[in-house]
Image (cartoon, rainbow, N blue to C red; front, side, top):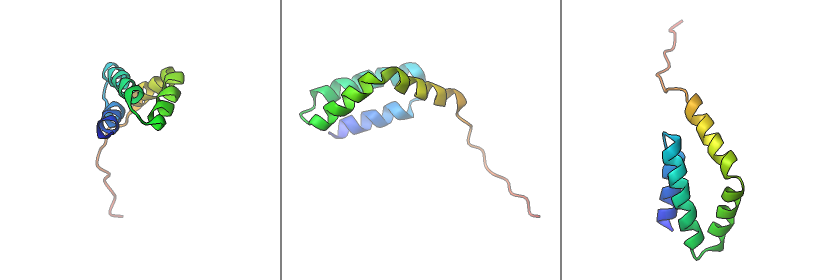
Length: 75
Protein backbone atom coordinates (compact mmCIF):
# COMPACT_ATOMS: atom_id res chain seq x y z
CA UNK A 1 0.00 0.00 0.00
CA UNK A 2 2.88 2.39 0.70
CA UNK A 3 4.17 2.09 -2.86
CA UNK A 4 0.81 3.17 -4.24
CA UNK A 5 0.83 6.27 -2.04
CA UNK A 6 4.43 7.14 -2.90
CA UNK A 7 3.87 6.69 -6.64
CA UNK A 8 0.83 8.97 -6.54
CA UNK A 9 2.89 11.60 -4.70
CA UNK A 10 5.61 11.27 -7.38
CA UNK A 11 2.96 11.76 -10.06
CA UNK A 12 1.64 14.90 -8.39
CA UNK A 13 5.12 16.36 -7.89
CA UNK A 14 6.19 15.68 -11.50
CA UNK A 15 7.74 18.57 -13.33
CA UNK A 16 6.83 17.51 -16.86
CA UNK A 17 3.65 16.24 -18.43
CA UNK A 18 5.11 13.08 -20.01
CA UNK A 19 6.61 11.84 -16.74
CA UNK A 20 3.40 12.61 -14.90
CA UNK A 21 1.34 10.73 -17.47
CA UNK A 22 3.60 7.68 -17.26
CA UNK A 23 3.54 7.69 -13.45
CA UNK A 24 -0.24 7.92 -13.52
CA UNK A 25 -0.42 4.90 -15.83
CA UNK A 26 1.78 2.94 -13.43
CA UNK A 27 -0.30 4.09 -10.47
CA UNK A 28 -3.52 2.98 -12.13
CA UNK A 29 -2.07 -0.48 -12.79
CA UNK A 30 -1.06 -0.81 -9.15
CA UNK A 31 -4.41 0.48 -7.93
CA UNK A 32 -6.33 -2.05 -10.04
CA UNK A 33 -4.09 -4.89 -8.83
CA UNK A 34 -4.59 -3.90 -5.19
CA UNK A 35 -6.81 -6.11 -3.03
CA UNK A 36 -8.46 -2.98 -1.60
CA UNK A 37 -11.70 -1.85 -3.24
CA UNK A 38 -11.08 1.76 -2.21
CA UNK A 39 -8.14 1.89 -4.65
CA UNK A 40 -10.39 0.44 -7.37
CA UNK A 41 -12.92 3.23 -6.77
CA UNK A 42 -10.25 5.93 -7.00
CA UNK A 43 -8.75 4.30 -10.11
CA UNK A 44 -12.17 4.24 -11.79
CA UNK A 45 -12.72 7.92 -10.98
CA UNK A 46 -9.29 8.90 -12.28
CA UNK A 47 -9.82 6.89 -15.47
CA UNK A 48 -13.18 8.59 -16.04
CA UNK A 49 -11.60 12.03 -15.58
CA UNK A 50 -8.06 11.28 -16.74
CA UNK A 51 -7.88 13.93 -19.47
CA UNK A 52 -9.16 16.64 -17.16
CA UNK A 53 -6.94 15.42 -14.35
CA UNK A 54 -3.81 15.57 -16.54
CA UNK A 55 -4.82 18.90 -18.06
CA UNK A 56 -5.05 20.38 -14.57
CA UNK A 57 -1.53 19.19 -13.89
CA UNK A 58 -0.35 20.51 -17.26
CA UNK A 59 -1.89 23.90 -16.51
CA UNK A 60 -0.25 23.94 -13.08
CA UNK A 61 3.12 23.16 -14.66
CA UNK A 62 2.74 26.01 -17.14
CA UNK A 63 1.67 28.61 -14.63
CA UNK A 64 3.76 27.60 -11.63
CA UNK A 65 5.09 30.75 -10.02
CA UNK A 66 8.75 30.50 -9.04
CA UNK A 67 9.32 30.69 -5.32
CA UNK A 68 11.21 33.85 -4.50
CA UNK A 69 11.90 35.37 -1.12
CA UNK A 70 9.56 38.11 0.01
CA UNK A 71 11.40 41.32 0.82
CA UNK A 72 9.53 43.47 3.26
CA UNK A 73 9.96 47.18 3.50
CA UNK A 74 11.15 48.56 6.83
CA UNK A 75 8.76 51.46 6.64
